[in-house]
Structure formats: C-alpha cells, structure tokens
Image (cartoon, rainbow, N blue to C red; front, top):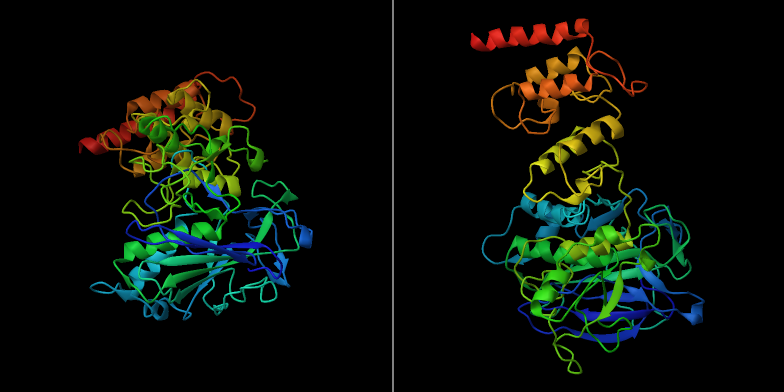
Length: 493
C-alpha cells in the first residue's frame, strides 16, 4: 500500500513491441507500471533506501511469513496471500477486456489467471527448491481502485481490498498492458523469513494492486497470462531486471553469482545458469556466493551496451517489454524468489512438499535414468545419481526396507499384493516404486526381488533396530515364492 510518508515511488511504464521504457519519480511508497521484456539480466528486487523522516531503516520489500496486521487488517503470507478480481467473478472480469478474434471462455480465462499465480508456487525445476508462497482466491472481498497518490498527504498505507487486487483499468497507452501498485507498512521494519528467521530487516509489503489494461485489445489469452504472471512477480517484491533510470536508487544493479560480460558467450553462460541453491536461506541478503553487478541498457544514453543485455537466449520473466517465450519464471526468477522467500529443503524431499513420499523416490529413480541427472538428487555426495542414492533414500531417510512398496515401514505380503495388482510384472513397461521397481531400472521384474531379498527385510517388521540383517530366514521366503508361483501359472493361462 502507498505510505502516508515519504517512501519513494517509481512509475515505470512498460511497453510491448520493444519500445523503450520510460520512468519518472514521485513521492509516496512504491508504484510499478510494467509489462514484459526483450532484454535479459539476473534478478533484481525492490530496495527502498533508509527514510530518516519516519525513522525507517528501509530495505528490501518482502511479505511477512508470520501473521501481520496493518490497521487491524491481516496482511501476510500466513494462510496464503488472498486475491480478488474486479466484478467479483471470472465472468464479470472477462467482460471488461477486448480480444483479437474470439474471446476466451470463462473457464479458459479462470484457468489462465490461476496458472499465473501457480507460476510462482511451482518447484524450481533446476534446483528442486519449493516455496512457502501460496495464493488463495477471495472473490467475495470487493476490489477497490485507489486513486493515484501524488503527495505525502494523500498517501494511503493500506489497499482496502484483498491482499492482492486484480483490476481492469484503462492505462491510456496503446502499448501498455499491465502495472503493479505495491503498498508498504511504514511502521514495521522487519519480517520473519519463510526459512524461520525472525526480525529480519525489510520493508514489509502490506498489499498489492495489479492493473490490467482494459482499453487495449489483447492479442491472446497467453499474452494476458504472461503479463499477469509478470505483475505478480512485482507483487511479491521482484523488480524489473532491465529497468534503467537515473532517478532509481538501485538503477541497473542486479544480483548474480558469476556474471561475466567479456563476450556474448560468457554472458549467456553466466546469465542462464541456475544459482537459487547458492542463496543462504538464513541470511539471503548477505549470501556469500552472490554479488551485485551494474549494467546499463540501450535506453540509457550515458552507457555503452555490453554483452549480456541483448545476448540471444537470455530470457528472464521479470523483464519489461513483451517477447514471445515460454511463460513463467526462469532460472534467475526462481533465484529471486528464493532470495525473497527462502525455502529450506528437506533432504530427499524432491517434490518440495515437506514430506518423504512415494513420489519422491519415483522422482529419484527417474533421475537415475536421466541423461544428465541433476546433482541435488545425489544423496551420498559422490557426484553421481544412481541406485546407491535410491538405497540411501529408502534405508536411511525413510528408514524402511527395499521392497516396502507402500512405504508403511515394513516389507511384507501386503507389498507383494500391491505390486502384483498393478499388473506391471515382466511387461517391460515403466513401473514406479509402488508398482514393483525396487532396483531403480523403472521396470518390475525378477531383479527387483533379488534387490529386495538381499536387503533382508521381508517380514522383519520396522527397520528400526535391524542395523545389520542378512538374507531372510528360509521360512520367511516361502510366502513370496509361493505367491510368485501362483502368479506365474495365472499368467501362462
């Protein structure tokens, strides 16, 4: 929300078709008018300088992970960030916009909006890092269009609607597609990080309004989703990576781990590598592996363009003018999210749902077969992802046995019944852990029984207390052997 004090505000107009961005400076808290981009740099965040007039230390904008109220209204990540749309329904909101050709259906429009939010909730595919960010629809809360505040006296510190309001607004510019208005709490100077660290210096975001142009014709629903997703990046505290203005205190400074602009090749390599996992989740602002770099773009006459600005193949979601590319965050966007809302990964939790499940071991097994496996699946730190890592996940992290198909902590006849019911035995089709693939080759065959019985857990109960167990006793082998015989005869018939 716009502050009633002298927080700086930036107006940054983003245009499509590669036209240059313009910016002006004003008073109040923070106002971002942006679209998508044609140039690429690593992530930038909204960083407000100290404000002595109101005794505020300034800092990087973040939503508070702990419950937080502003003027007695809840404004935090706790319970998810609530969002509403103008009109109170997807049908009414859709009716506010003009489209080239046939307009999308209400269901398609709703799905596009939900996918734009989901872009920022997804697991980083390069590092496996998840997020505590959650967005919750709250369509019963009416959105409120806050008039522009041009002075301290007019400044508001709370947007009256939901935590994030999405509105159709005339932007009076044939190229402008969207803008985000970010509100901040001028009283509180710290947050609790999503990694659990409390009293971390920050400017506390207390709300955001996203304005989508209803006076322009939208080329497609994909364009609408792409712009909305970009504006939501602003709503969580990310800045345009290629914004360049002499009035902006951060100007062209951005975070990266190893940026090298010696050549287009070096710029491409260092601007597209993933570095989210290098960020210190307990003190992201002071991550040793990150550095601040300054780079000018072609919109700044005082600077000479260098490799990295227009390097082909460098695609960052948080750029300022629209370009055709796959929607959603890219490597550096995920690094920015990790920087603002650090996620502490549980070892072996590959789907980032904060628990160890069958899905995690299936993801690990599929990575074993990958041409270039990602090393965050490497559980024994031997710089390889193989069947040994599967054994570590099952026996040490899950504390169970090879053969425990349902991961209930025991390997017994129930597991045989489950895997044979799946019908994958000796079919040469892809099988999951729950379908009998216990040796990591993504098939269910005799090799899986060998792996299971070598582990020695059949009918031994929970693994706890069985640190050294050899092969099962002979009597314990009769049930699975008899079961296999019956199933083999049934298959032959």
